Length: 124
Ligand SMILES: [Zn+2]
Image 1 (cartoon, helix red, strand yellow):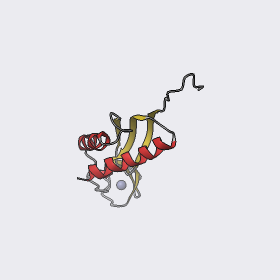
Image 2: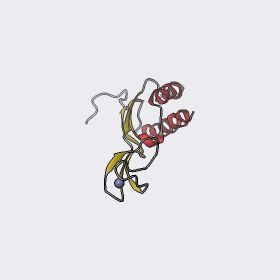
Image 3: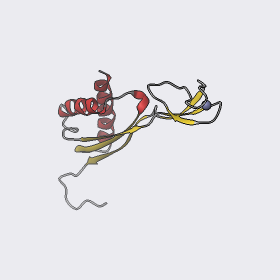
Image 4: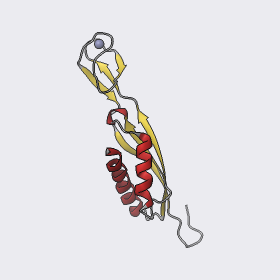
């Protein structure tokens, strides 16, 4: 179940950032995950809830997941195609040499934090 280790990794990174920015809580996290990583988004959300519940900064944070299609371009005929189950074969000419265009990324796109403190009249 690699979704748990992914959820753990996301939680680790965003918590580190939130501490840097002196956040009191993390409201939402937006991640981009390439299709080639074969992540089950429902499982990832479930795991993230479990992981975040145990951490005060993350408790109640919303996880938004963008899945990026796995696409490649054939080196032989230049055709761009959707890679299914990591089979990098061009559907047009059956060539097996292709360059990956997208779908392998894994990044935290942005996150929303709350760093309101008890003092009043903050500027900004
Ligand atoms: Zn081709």
